[in-house]
Length: 220
Image: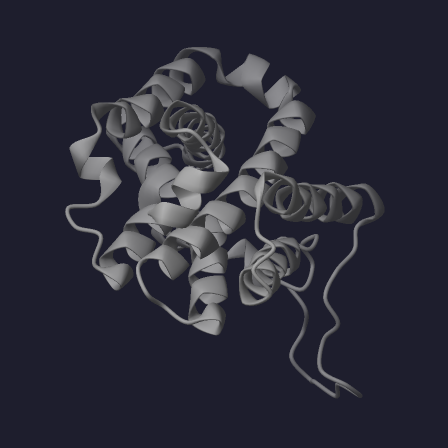
């Protein structure tokens, strides 16, 4: 992982990964509580949400066994989020805005790290950007599927989520193309995705639906 090692020291990258994993796990655990899942269901949804995108990326690029199975911290962190939500979910719900902010930060970080890691393993720029997107949003898709929900990034009535990750991943790919990826430009890409997600939540930005849509199906 030459490019990643140039951008971040191993300790910094590991810490950032764990923070992102923890916040994503909280969002999965909270959905499980809303769905009235038992403690096992809460733990499963927390683990899937936190690690699903990274697992998918690592399996695709051949980084096996995935980091989630070689680093105990990656597995334990979602369990800590499970315990927190299990006992304190009313309090966690009250700070949902703060959780959303950290979730947006995790989105920005993971789309950058995912794109860079895929490129390190020999994928082209477009494929790397796609896996950067998958890293950022894959866990959320798996979470919604397991909870019998239409995935949030497919719903027109949800604030933009995938688009900020696409922008961040595309910025990284362009920086790689022109050999200008460094700590400053990678941080800029992550911050751009983060800010776009915050603006989408603040102003309820949504992706357009089909042009001149004429559907007789009632909207849900």
